[in-house]
Length: 408
Image 1 (tube, rainbow, N blue to C red):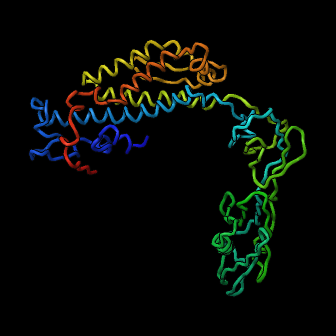
Image 2 (cartoon, rainbow, N blue to C red; image 1 turned 180 degrees about the vertical axis):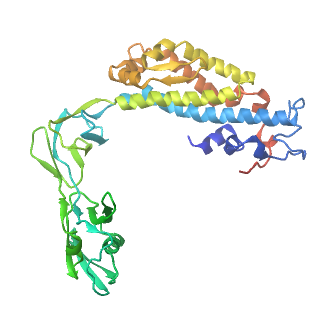
Image 3 (cartoon, helix red, strand yellow; image 1 turned 120 degrees about the horizontal axis):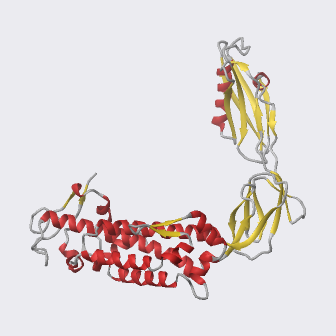
């Protein structure tokens, strides 16, 4: 649900207003007096203008933030209770060597991927030259060279004069290459004491080589930039001991809808298994705590309202009744009512099936927890204003100012 939809559903004058300081909010009521509300609004006769401003600002902030976070938490719960977080996925047995990038959801038998070599881009390293010495240009002129890459030849030129230094010569050549935008990056490196510099080239694409040659003058020979320090090569890998496969990039299609990033050569085959998506469970539990805490913080900000206090009491009771089962999935509640997830324990609970039993067991351990939460969500969604001062929920938007001037 978008912020705009939430505003429309719950009748907020301006969601922006809850993120701005009260000191920069200014409205003019129908009676001409400055304030948030129409002074003739029912039930407000005993409120001073400043009290109305503070009370409504606090109430609107609570309702707005809580609505967003409850919507988010409902989505998180849906991932668990609907089962999507427990669907199987492709998992790498060594994420330092092979990382799953995408999975199409097709069931498969476990795979073993041997990575023989990674795809690399070509690198050329020129020779070190004294930064202040003259490269041997006796007169002004134009140097031309060509780079062949991907079957195309690109001719490049740059001007020099007889006062050129080695470093400025290298830099002009680098600028000519970079401005051509042909898939090669040129840059200058210097030694530790800064007395010598070298021109270097890096290919941007793996598996694609290039060649560089002099056409007019001897810029390539002079800088030594034709020296290949790393050849471009394709990635080579095999699946389940089968035939070797190649890829120009380090992204490989492993079949069954699995796309993997190859990160390093492996001495042993890397297992790719079809298992429960523990990461989705782990992230879902953390997101649940994050949503709850943001909602709880907003409620604390409006806790002087006795109706919001009842709201907090209901949620607090739900959590306190489930402290033991929440701990079983790595979730703890502190003295102030905020939730925290112990990442290591959440991973353990996701791996050993505890989280699944919490939501989906024959007798789900967390059934009371999420059923009570869903009841509270439903009550809040149907009428969020019941959890703040009753006069707020009775007022129609017609009693509110036509515009809110928000500056800053």
